[in-house]
Image (cartoon, rainbow, N blue to C red; front, side, top):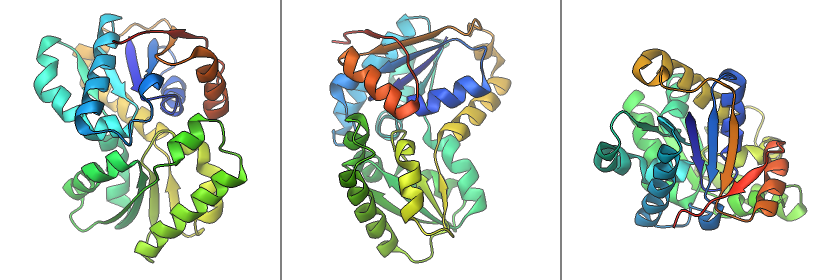
Length: 267
């Protein structure tokens, strides 16, 4: 099984692309909606919630877990990989930041990143982009209201448009030479068209889903010891720590999916 963990339902935008690229692989999705959003929480809180979710997915039979949450990838991934995984030999946890930056750092030298406060504060994108291209210049801007706009189903409102316009204006005020902007949160693709409308046409706009899915294909080719353990019956399972009715409604609005979620308690 491939496990996909997110703070809410934004990770479904990544899961959709994984299903498109790897349709035979069985997946379990876990959204920790009870603690959403992660982007305004501390490092220790994010690590605690993320590790609880990862452990639960391991216990369901997942040998590989994708953190389809930038805040979790930025704040918790390294701690989990370095201090926690020894408890689960033969299991792997991957984030979404590294796969995303590999393309951008090779193609552009002026990049804007829109993300949650936790991701921006971690400077994970700055560090990863610089590893690949020292010459790259990065402008980050945190958008603390965007996740709540998406999770509450308010994305197609004038209030949302106003919030988006304000944040884009602030990012553009930091640099007039941006070549590309990355949506550094898996919730943000829901707002892609609205962002595209207010972003100058000469600036490329990137979401993460397809980049992560393509990177996963490459990872599995290079790690047969993990790939051969993964179930390939196209089973799809969805779990949440939140209220099922609200989560299923948000899943439909955010990812155009109609999955049947089951409730789980990670405490």
